[in-house]
Length: 133
Image (cartoon, rainbow, N blue to C red; front, side, top):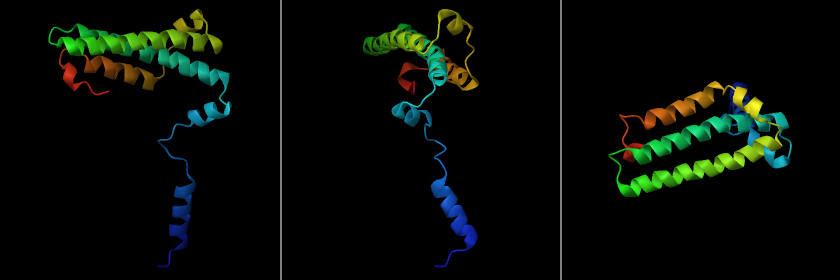
């Protein structure tokens, strides 16, 4: 099969283009090339996500319609989020984030969407068995 110049160009561009779903930050971190300010921003965003997830897991554990084994599972997940928050605080401090900066930080829109999803999944309408993380 003979390909046209346009097909060859499109095929080559597709192969050389970065994956739109790839995480561009991870290779930078692996190489030690990530900017400290970028790592600080990551820490600040994660503060909101972790806090939201912890509240959501606790809310699921405390629901009256949750079986004891499920409540214990969600409590364990909430405890894991608390541990992650403790570790994140150390990481954020190493990135130069102080309490004033952390308190003043407004999360980006995507972070707010993730937090909102956690809240909705644990709302009165959601059943713990259907929570999809």
